[in-house]
Image (cartoon, rainbow, N blue to C red; front, side):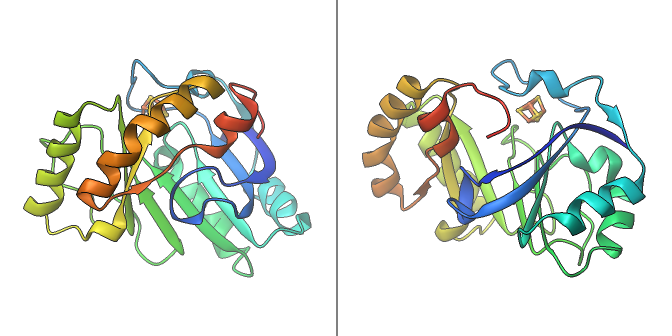
Length: 200
Ligand code: SF4
């Protein structure tokens, strides 16, 4: 398995925001979003075997494990092998939603669709949309949610940002629009507090 980084931190995004987790950032992605703030995870990474990951997860005091990337599902088979050996933990997944999401292995799956022309992925529990903040983008997400019968409480809106000031400024702009459309705001706590620092 190719792993970009492993660290313990608080979840800064989505429905489990604020919860302590062990983050495992898998290397490699099948997209190349211009605004991506984890471009360092697109390539490289440390080669690790499933046993090493099982040991790291088991030795963590934290209850939650968050598989993220990059696109972690590029290495889905290996991840599932690790999960099967660490069933005492609560495994979460963050995916761009372009690959089949395996059913029954993750307690929480947050998919972040990038192309609203595509159908939402099957087996996602929550949806995170990363926006610049134009009112028209919110309208597009609103239509997408309606067209695909996605309940409001499953929709999280997140600003495109990698610096503290930008995250705060975007959050203020997004606030009213989230209220208007009934979406939850995912302000990116780690960016607000630490900017582009890695490992948080
Ligand atoms: S899908 Fe996620 S990790 Fe991949 S390029 Fe886009 S933002 Fe970055």
